Length: 233
Ligand code: 5RP
Image (cartoon, protein in one colour):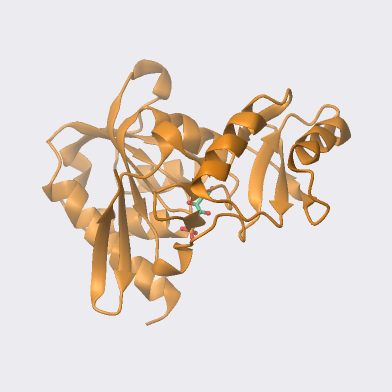
């Protein structure tokens, strides 16, 4: 099966789960990316879906538009304290449910909305499961002001000449820029420490390490037999 078809089957499972195993009128946080797009397509095929949820919080303009297209009510984080479920893809996920996210550039809103959720359900094909985090470049969103100094401060944390920071061309929805750190190889403990250090650098808006209260509680993924669910403590 192609990777796209695997993503579609994971999305189909997740859509059924969300509409059949959540309370009516619950609030869902919806991530960004191709797996999430397939999930929204699948929700669109379930006639009861738009009425089942009170509404959803969206993490990007693209996701919001797709949710509106299938009739989902869009809620704003300002009006809500807590949501039942945050559901999103990942670029990498390890055996503790820690992730690198932000390949699609939506990491800041993803992290904020994930932090409001009682549980994070990650939907990711099994190519995203890793032992160490960092083969996928780690995205960091910055305020554009004094970009060279901020990048210098980021790189000085690592003390590793093999690392490099590459700036993406596009500006984010928050008017930030994203640099991708290449060459990391992080255990869970490394990832937790690094996320905390990056959060202390002035000018860093958010980094793509999802640990602590934004790590995954469940992973919906695939193996040779079909869909499998992992749960993390
Ligand atoms: C976007 C993300 C995505 O969840 C991540 O990039 C995975 O995307 P896809 O489902 O397309 O593989 O973090 O910022």
